[in-house]
Image (tube, rainbow, N blue to C red; front, top):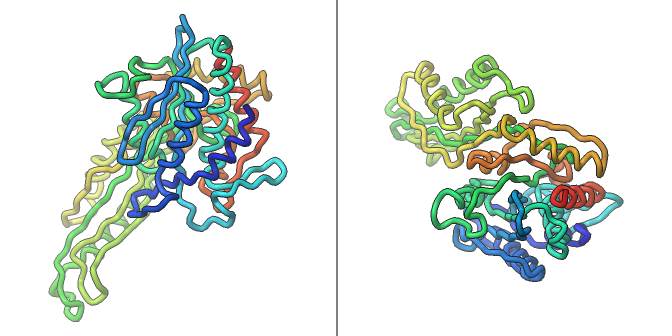
Length: 388
């Protein structure tokens, strides 16, 4: 199976994650792509199941067993993409120009998904070539709150999980654009809101009230200082860099003629291996209490970013790099600043790495594209890895 026509089909099917916004329509969520994947696995006559994560949002998991196999290998790729706002190309019309195919998701991560599906399909037709059981998981909601993989990774430890993963798999390869390198370490992201409150009054006499926005301004100023100090508080990881903090959104107030009694910001705290993804909130709370003389509130995080360490996946990475070198020449182990599903599998006791065609520099861009050569190379590499 050539992965290129498959990738064209995947791009044509919108699967935009609204990213918490109240948006509806045929281009949003993964429903249509899930239906395509169900049809794809049904056509291969392999065992598969769907796992409902939320109404209209389902993981799709398929499996090929090799009698007597000692390993079970998971190939995981997410179904959703980021929104298409600001794109300068038709997002759902796959276009081929030279060695490039463009469209939303072409790089992140429908290219990786197509490579995995194509390799899986080849082996479904010749299962005797396999050296391990193979599970293909197509998960939802990676781009926002990772609910799909969080549920899937509980399948072998809690009742009611995916029936095709009732036992812990041996290892996992996660699809993301890595330039065909092998990612063995990455940062996680913990995201939460900080709230300040005040007392509303008419803006003609602002001294009668207390501005929540003015209070938040002091909080933001303290956060800027904290972000600058982070490199001295936590030594950088040798592969994926240092901890960071960013304030990405702020909102507050009801009207320009009312002193605001409420303001909130959203914080993105990148967590490196060795840090506690929840403990970073306590660290920041303690710091702010030394900087401001009023109360503030930290709301529960909507995502707790698990980092991926490189202490348990070295053997897997070496195996994969050996196959890559035989197919396309030497590549290397790397660390990256962004998060992936690999940390969720690793936290559940499964050694995991990240691998796929394309560059992260093209992910989420206004003219997202993927090298077709790498798409086909990734497919051949995965097929060879599963049959070695």
